[in-house]
Image (cartoon, rainbow, N blue to C red; front, side):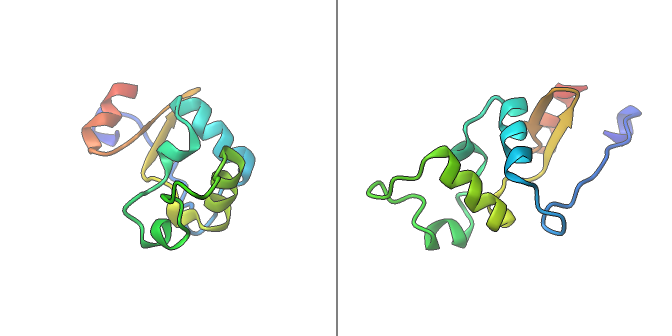
Length: 97
């Protein structure tokens, strides 16, 4: 982003975890359901049995898990205005500019 004249506001959410409302807003800006912004490669994802079809994880449960364990949240997430994108690969961020 900096190469394109945009200075990002970086929020280190492992140090400053987002609230449930923040995550709802992120989902809205990304146009994604909570399950789609969880890092499925995290060991914690498996430890919590989020991938277990026998568990009834609704959106509130998933958001509460991300609040409690921010490591589950995909990163980086880039927000510009009321739109957002998961910045992986990094070139995807250019879609917001």
